[in-house]
Length: 65
Image (tube, rainbow, N blue to C red; front, side, top):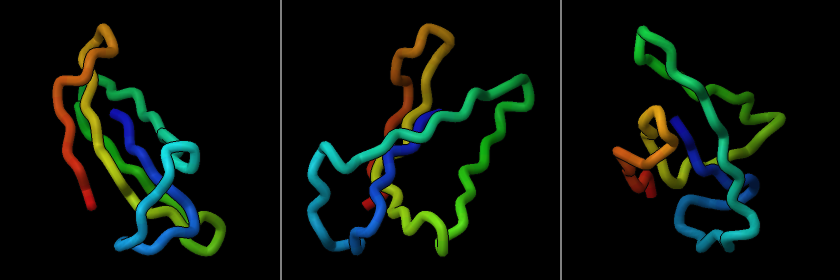
């Protein structure tokens, strides 16, 4: 799983590509995931969630904004 995030932007602001960070989480056999961060330390907004197959190809993508 991958989650694109940006720090310090409001939901309605345009985020430049260079400010987008991709968080990654490797799924195991339970196929569950959780992205969690402390908003005091990282004021992230979620932008795009992607699911990848074993070859790293995108098989699911959802815009979150």
